[in-house]
Image (cartoon, rainbow, N blue to C red; front, side):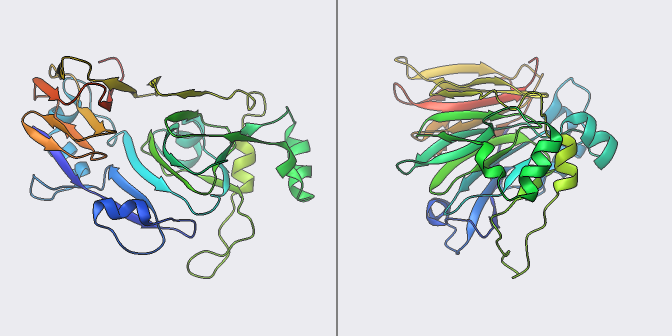
Length: 304
């Protein structure tokens, strides 16, 4: 079965709404569009959420595997007019022990549109101790050790737990992440939120989860993606000259497909560019048809 989802828009102070008009959302301040996650409603299955569907039909999602506590992936588009907060995410151990969550947060950014000189923050320029980092925060000078990285369209970056990071302005990207909302803000440029109140910082927790021993390694590439997350894998695939590729869920795992540069035909259904669809584990063989060099993301459970 091929499942299609109703996207969920999220308003934020740094949002840039132009990109989201492609999906029929015209409101101001939209900065995120959640495409697949636990709370997304399934358009072609009674509008129930993916969470409810997973509980009712666990084998259609997880196949022969033991069902996970919740659907493990959150996929969203992000489009920015300003810097996001400087932040960090926890690992599995901290999430389980401190937040009573099933896992921490690893995420990947695939850059779709960038203005000239677009930048992100990813890691630190040099190794510092926790005490040195605290001193830099207190003196409002920790910006000098942040690692600013130039990014362009079709680049990708992997953000591991414990790595300090932020997305810069005038960037539109696809984010594929563990289904977790655990984010600890370290610095937010002194801004007020949409409600006129200062945005919450979580410096105490951030200091507990920042990996001060390994914050210098930048995991970045361009074009081809083939990454392994704690519970799933994500890769980009080109259709090639045959203009058709066959896959098989084999009853083992759902497959998620995201067309990146053109619409595709999947199991005789037209899937629009940037649409995010899920093929259930019991679907079996299916074909993806498109043009030579059409590219898409394939996401599935780890070990499938």
